[in-house]
Image (cartoon, rainbow, N blue to C red; front, top):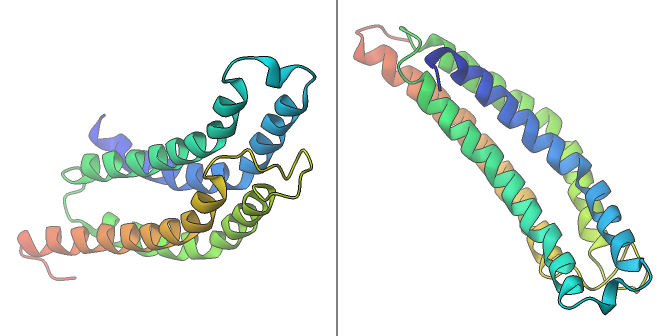
Length: 167
């Protein structure tokens, strides 16, 4: 990854996390349609794989976004001479993340509700561990987003101090 693509990677990773959380209910509905297809339960282990799929997809997609942010942050470590970009970007990221987090909560609540067990296609009990994961995930995302923004700003401050410039 080039030094100049680090900030762009960080921005797209944050937007990707919000987008995955916002659109995940569509994936869940599509998987529910697969389970409701005539004969889907006749195939060996298919219902178990489809039952695990949303949990694995959610963890993989959100983990991938976090990893992309981490790699982008590493790439920007040496890219800006003063660290001022990282200070400003960290502050903006906290503001943006908190502002957009309502969308994440609403979307994750839909996933949590659809992982329930009242017997309909959208609310089926076959989503293995999804209800537990989707009840914990918003807290992890919120704390991770705030921590990432603060850590980005702190790395910028440290970079400026090493170069003899104060904030």
